[in-house]
Image (cartoon, rainbow, N blue to C red; front, side, top):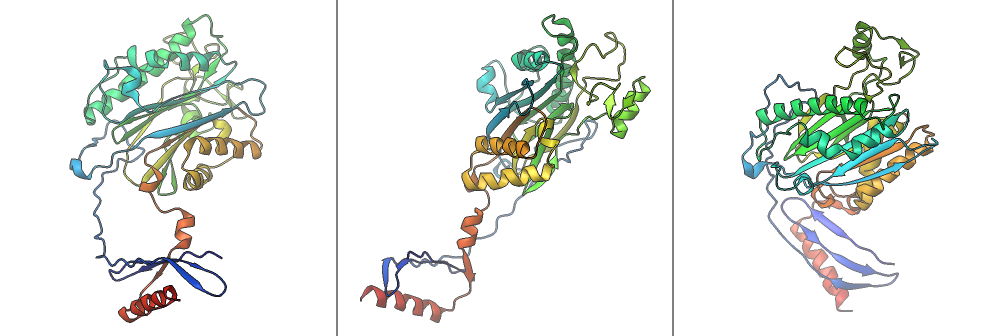
Length: 384
């Protein structure tokens, strides 16, 4: 039998002891007793922007001294599956290093990243068009703001740029003859600029932030039955039938679907304008899940966060976590295509100890006499 014992002593004494034990004797392999001063608690200063903050409010995203600011360490993984559908209509984009992807002509804070999930309907053309033209649509055509510093002006300019990008992408789908007028797509994009996380959403994909194990929705599903969406739809001449916009579409915001929209320039119940939510990331923020509605139709935001969190503590692999989340949705009999992106903000060794490590720890208070007895016991066994 092999046993490993770790004794963590309170009151500024730390003792690590490792030994092998069999049925009749104990053989020492390492005898290390380390006594160190108690580590001082570190004071963390952080500024959090509420997730439902509107652009009209003043946001200072750089209040902390540089030495105290949390800097995300970005890595991601993704997985997509056709599910029970006959055709795959989902697309996604995943860029962990935006400056490297766009080249030296663009200036962004470090780190900078871009992610998007596009859940198509009425055929794959609309989602594929947005995915294939994402760089042009979201950055080049709208003169995306550039800076090395994140402040309130930059945030407002980014939101204006993204709002314009969604609308122009919608118009481009109507102009492109290779895209059917009955094809459309929802769109959720997530940007990271330094510590700023900004989510823009039109449709029923969802972004969920994990903060110390708690799920925080970073987007609202645009369903026709939601009171705010229903009111807007009905004021513009649309109607809701059994949860469907005009009896046809299960979302109230989408790009494309020009057979359901009024002529260009006229208000329409179905719109492409996104809603925004933003937050300043701190060391409490562990990862972001971005998924299409095939995930959220069969599980809650909190269940998804808990599943991914357990997976990261087992193997620290966001790609595997994305796959596991898709497999869980299939096990729960989802009826849609499935796409998931997991974006991690720190490595496992920067977070909490894994559950298995926590289970091996024993905390106690030992007197000086007890420490001496323990040392004599080990010395006596080693002389046998």
